[in-house]
Image 1 (cartoon, rainbow, N blue to C red):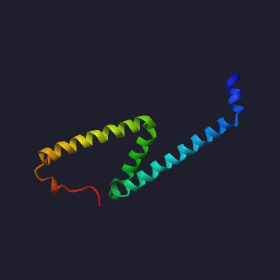
Image 2: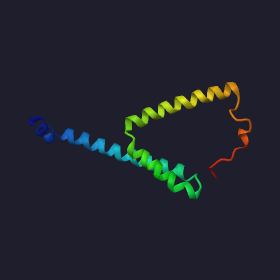
Image 3: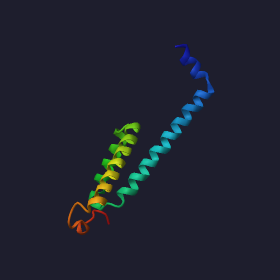
Image 4: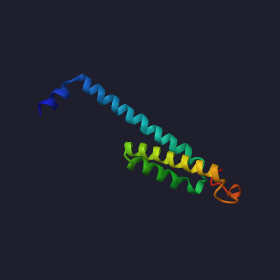
Length: 102
């Protein structure tokens, strides 16, 4: 219990905590801006669903797991890209598919 009292009295511990809180706030706002930019590209009917899913995923996924998931998904996309470049498109008329973006 004595260590908690010493930490509470140490100004550098409070400075470290304030720095951590500020970083979390900035990174949280960064996620919100990113989700807003991506969801603005989706048509009006599906925009609310996209924002809800993005905010839910951002709130529920722990930060470390999000980074690991992102790195894993980038590796998978890169592997699929290499396979597609080697074998051609997966669908015969893939250039005719409609995009859900504007």
